[in-house]
Image 1 (cartoon, rainbow, N blue to C red):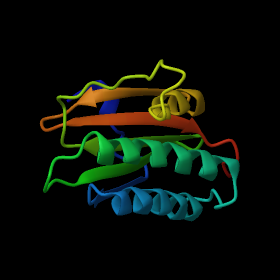
Image 2 (spheres, one colour):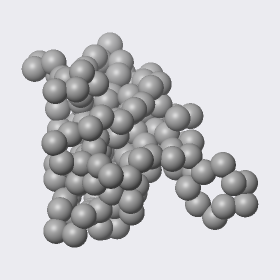
Image 3 (cartoon, helix red, strand yellow):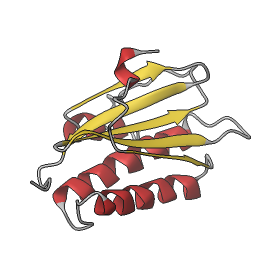
Image 4 (cartoon, rainbow, N blue to C red):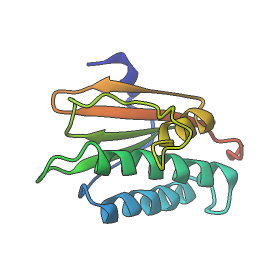
Length: 144
């Protein structure tokens, strides 16, 4: 198992498989907002908004670039500490490397730049089928 996706057994975790469609990507964002609210980070908090944006980008990439017909993508949210949220989005395609768009006139492709700006750290891990793109975000408004 790749060390980047090893989880402590005591960390609160939410996992959901979703259809690799735009609707599935939207649902991933909504589920993230709901789960973070349940974990004490209200919908209108900065932490919740940042997590929603990260999930939106990673899920959109999974649906757009990582889609394999008939295969779902997976969303996993983990609280390794009270101050950190780890987001993992796994898709069924491991044959397409991630890339940053460097053409300033390109119409899209800046999602990973946004992920790099919003996340404390992020990366990619191979899996048996496909890949997992993960990001960690600070929960500044964590309950004490």
